[in-house]
Amino acid sequence: MKEKLEAIKNSALSQIKETDSLEKLNDIRVAFLGKKGELTEVLKGMKDVAPEDRPKVGQIVNETREAIESLLAERIAMFEAEKLRRRYKAEKIDVTMPAKKAARGNLHPITQIKNELIDIFGSMGFEIYEGTEIETDHYNFTALNTPQDHPARDMQDTFYLSPEFLLRTQTSAGQIHVMETGKLPIKVISPGKVFRSDDDATHSPMFSQMEGLVVDKGITLCDLKGMLDVFVKKIFSEEVTTRLRPSYFPFTEPSVEVDVSCFQCGGKGCKLCKGTGWIEVLGAGVVNKKVLEGCNIDTEVYSGFAFGIGIERIAMLKYGINNIKLLFESDLRVLDQIDDN
Ligand code: DAH
Image (cartoon, rainbow, N blue to C red; front, side, top):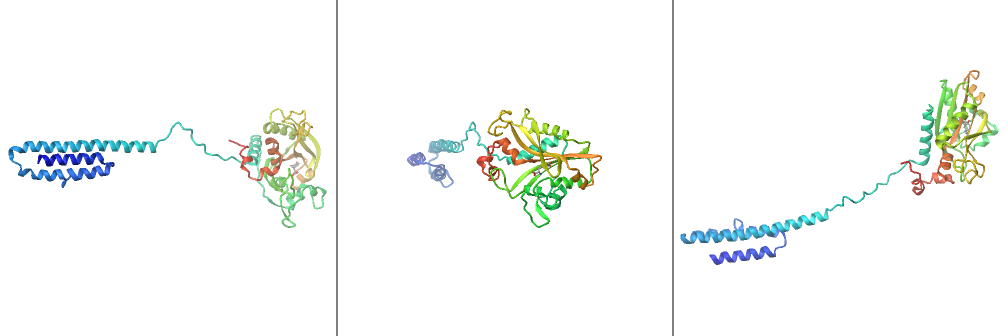
């Protein structure tokens, strides 16, 4: 029996040593120590051992069991440590590694400028009126003192949808809608898309404007000039001043073209201002009495000023873009550079 136990022990220990996985170790444990295991089988034979030898044999059995169990435990611990080590290695994360930057989109430059304009004029108390892109000939032209066959119609090459309907060529159309409501005084801006059959480096068939209209008692060209001075300082820079040049628009009288002192060279003359020191930024004027009267506004009491800003033009000037197409091609290499974040 002693030899048998010795043989079991040796066999178990050498199998345990050769085993290379936790699962197999478990099989060995069952094979030797399980209910039907080899050692258990031997124990069943204890009844045949002479009573005086039983303590001795019992001791050997226990030693054998302990030897097998202790080596099993040692190997199991070893495999488990190894398993854990491999898992730690596989799941290792370097918490000091810089995080991957999620690419963030930004608003389109036109939207950025539009929002900036809305913020500036909003802070001066202007409300927003959003017109429609499809307009009638009446609102876009006739009511703005530009009847059929008026030579000023040639200034804007129009997309007609029918003899009556067209794609608005100017946000000025909104002026009439606002004045027609009869609510006075008026202080509105109206940003939106406009359309003209025009296509070159600085013109696109679709572009954006922002109209401004103020109608109140005693409004003069000075009010316009004062407001524009505040506006250009906010949108360009504190040093910028304005200059008004006589111009012509059918719906304003007098009409002016507004220039800003060049914000790049400070007025000395550079490429941006074509050596003149001044850059044209918008059209404006005192609202023509004919237009006010057409909207039933008493011109003995009320007067107003209006202005129209080209949003792409402001964006091109501010960001140094020389071709308007760059604003409409959705090229991320361009758009990413004009970041509002
Ligand atoms: N509607 C004009 C254009 O598209 C711009 C403009 C000029 C608007 C003078 C105005 C203004 O309100 O007073 O060319």
